[in-house]
Image (tube, rainbow, N blue to C red):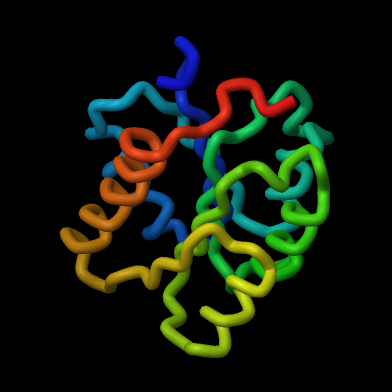
Length: 147
């Protein structure tokens, strides 16, 4: 928990199976959290802007961002997040299938906080999600009120 409230996680991921694995891993966490899932880059930005169906959405404490999504890819979303003073403090974890050095370098150039390649094995993927959550919410100190 952050300042006596649930941890808000936004996941931008277009793969239903990766969404389900992440939900399952986070559900079994010992932390109180809420996972919000969008399946394309435009929805991720609408969520952050609290527009349309996302009016009243919480500001996430962590963003899990896939690079290869429809409408707006992860690079475009990451660039907008890190350029906007309302969101640039939010840690963004690139969670993608790509292991390409090009993708890794470009994600960090756009100020991703970390880059994680998704394992194909279900158990390993679950471990990775739990490790991400454990690191960002048990080890790292995040601002409780970034405004």
